[in-house]
Image (cartoon, rainbow, N blue to C red):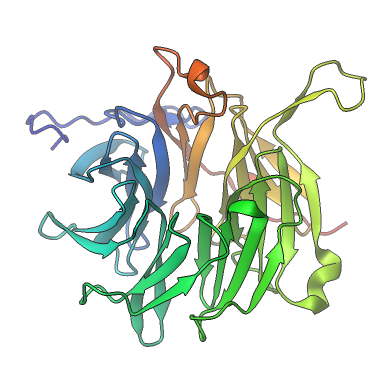
Length: 353
């Protein structure tokens, strides 16, 4: 079925292996967030058009719209539960909603006093919990059976980004605060730091498949920091510039600087992607400190990215991200959802030099 109740299924013909595949029937406004199911190749897509769309991705990359549900304001974040049968979304209507893919029903499961910027599913030994981070300067934990949160954590500022790799949770707020939580004690921050980057934090993302726990931070000033949680690993912390263009090749400090919009870690190999307002995507190996791949520049900013559960598919959104303000919102600005088939040499770690 397609989203809009017509009976003609919209499936894309599988493209040759080299070309990234464009998903038909994308959202009608900028794409804010992407998340693959942990159980199957279903992709949840949140948009500023107030809707969440679910697509099924076939073996050849062909996609089919499966379902759609709405908020009363732009959708800012999407995630799945562990079983992959529920999608949770957070929106500018100050609410989080849960959609059950088995019966097609959606219901409100969380409430804040300001937009819900991030939703994350936390799988604990005691069961699944939903964490919601908001511009009301709180993170709330919900067990989905009760309309009141299990607990509320006060943040130093508005929540901008949050990620979880149990038992690590990292929350980044306005004014460059970063709070690190050990989820065995979820109500108090284990550690609070100021971002190692000098400019506003855009995204935090936890390492996957890493010997030591840590996270990457991306800022609006074309820079990424790799940050380890424990003091003993701090000698491995570093930051690097990316998503910049030289205006004049040899003039110092004359580069155009773009925001890092999203960082996604590969679930198997632990390498990561960065994407930016400059329309480029790079894959990086944090341990060898090398760049593994650069995508051809897209015709607009890359607003969000995600790997599927086994890291064979990389999804990315080409959408206006408001990085140039109102004047950048030109009619006909591309709004596309793309799928890239990952090759081994792009996503495998390099041997250390």
